[in-house]
Image (cartoon, rainbow, N blue to C red; front, top):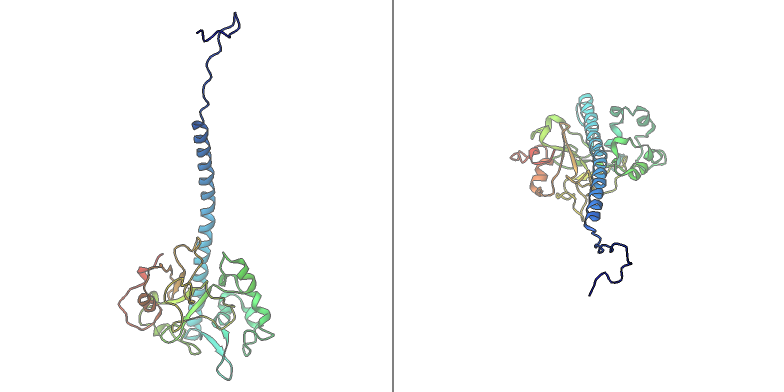
Length: 264
């Protein structure tokens, strides 16, 4: 049988149809998508790095204010002020305001009243930016801080009394003074911190407040902590409770677990 029987006389036969190949089209799509994703990642990384550096710098500034306070008064501030009955009233974060360039804000407080008195509660929204998390703007607006002290017996903030840097026998560069907290809502003026006797000794414990941070970048390395020497590091999730407690006490004379086990 003649395969060209239906062809029009005088015209060359039509070439056989070829099947369309989609492999090249899909390869081009995958290539273009890869470029777009790489570009987005490139743009996202500097943003996250900037936030990480801001968080790092904030803790450095707070530590510097505490160091200047200690140099001026011969001791760190107490963890909190108390009233005539010994009840905690105002946080150490208020006391270091003059050393953070916040003299006017400091003078606005009534130091003889609690943090939530009619006078002092109005200042909750005036929290200095270094006390807030750059990733949680809603907390900054409501006066919630990311920065707490480690308090209680054997720490740099024993309570209503004050400790000195000279008391830190384990070394300022080996002892946690400040920490990041995410699983506890802390008004910055309130006498609320992490007490070594009741806090969780595991980072990012979902059940008990402790040293913690959001799980997203730039916090994926772990929550931030700051030593008495002003060094900032990040607590890995695998640190043991024994190591954590050793890093928070000032004169436990533990073998150095130490700061080198944290992430920089």
